[in-house]
Length: 87
Image 1 (cartoon, rainbow, N blue to C red):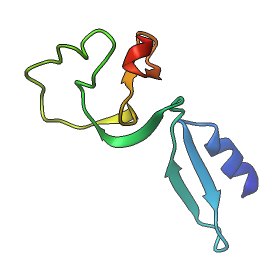
Image 2 (cartoon, helix red, strand yellow; image 1 turned 90 degrees about the horizontal axis):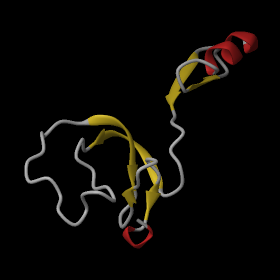
Image 3 (cartoon, rainbow, N blue to C red; image 1 turned 60 degrees about the vertical axis):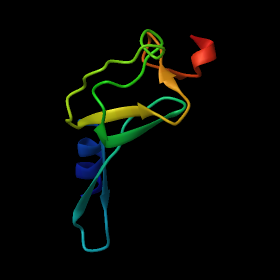
């Protein structure tokens, strides 16, 4: 069972754990960088270094799973979360 969990853990950026009853629990994780968090509902129109001074006027009201910058940070051209002064 442990080998199965290790094999599964290497797939699809998910972490699998085995509890005492030998069930496999799936915990979604993500490799978000510094100053970012993973969310099930990120905006498709997140502010970036290119648009933070003039953000899009219209943005679809949909959720996308992925990383988002914490408050006060925006995405740079490398998809890293930086302070606007670092753009």
